[in-house]
Image 1: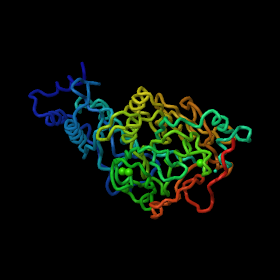
Image 2: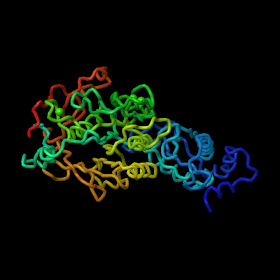
Image 3: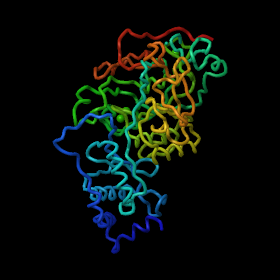
Image 4: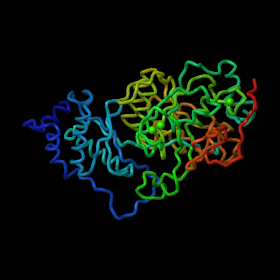
Length: 453
Ligand SMILES: [Ca+2]
Ligand SMILES: [Ca+2]
Ligand SMILES: [Ca+2]
């Protein structure tokens, strides 16, 4: 019997929908009552990821897979979940794939969020739920390397003495197709970087949380990276959304990745990317302390030209979607279905295998079926000490290792000289410099050496 029918059997006199659900839920309240975070006990900074959101698919009239429900119905059922759990659960928004985002008043450890989802799934019929997953917060993969053409060992010929990608030979064949679009799903970009000039399409900013977005609004058509710094106070203050995130200057991670993919080559400026011609589509999903899976899921579909509620259609769909981001956990329904949808639409999803020195099966989106997960090697050709590994890794590429071999054996790419929270980031003087993101003036200079060959 389809779940929807079983569900409607819970009530008899057909009162209004919201009330029907509330009535049906009364019997569940005792078992689902969820403790609010203990007051008075100091919150501990923890490496354990936290989230306050969930991605939910509500049951349509046709049962499982029977179609999406309206926003009004989703709001009613969200309220009903709050009643059932005796918690303040609020509706956030409709997302792609017929799913909805709901939230608790505060972030809880991911283990508690998984328990919440488990309990909700156990009562799926009564709650009118098809699926519910914690809305995991994903973060940019920072290589723990202190990741110019003379200094870009990773692109050079193997005969240079390094286990390099031998790009000069490939560049004899092609330096890229100007009609190809590569989406950089990341922290946004500095479009004013001279080595990336003329390469960016408009893109979009999918970060829904204005605070994390750090640009004064939620979603907007400008994927510029305003910086993602976390102050010491934000990191140390219990109750801060950035509590325990780690204080750091801005990463400019999206600009760095964009440069690895596509910094213009043989132009007498800075560094060379792998591809010198293709268009780069900046899709912003990460802000301060990372970004929600729900934003990433929408961004993935949008980048490939699929529809996302309340966002204009992407007129320049990307053939390749690059995500150098992730976090611990299973791939989960929403992300898995987004990858399946965009793959079916003809796009290729390339993701970092992760930098945790563990099996890539434990990190998502590296563990999503259908993605190309890329591990990291150092200049000797061995697995970089930080790179994830295992059968989920499709291919490896130079990632560098400066911990053991010094700055010169990192990966040099485009960045921004700004170091928010100083105002300098508003008037960026962009240039190439070496990883890491911590700014040390004068330490690294742009390489102006022309590309050989
Ligand atoms: Ca924004
Ligand atoms: Ca923006
Ligand atoms: Ca260049």
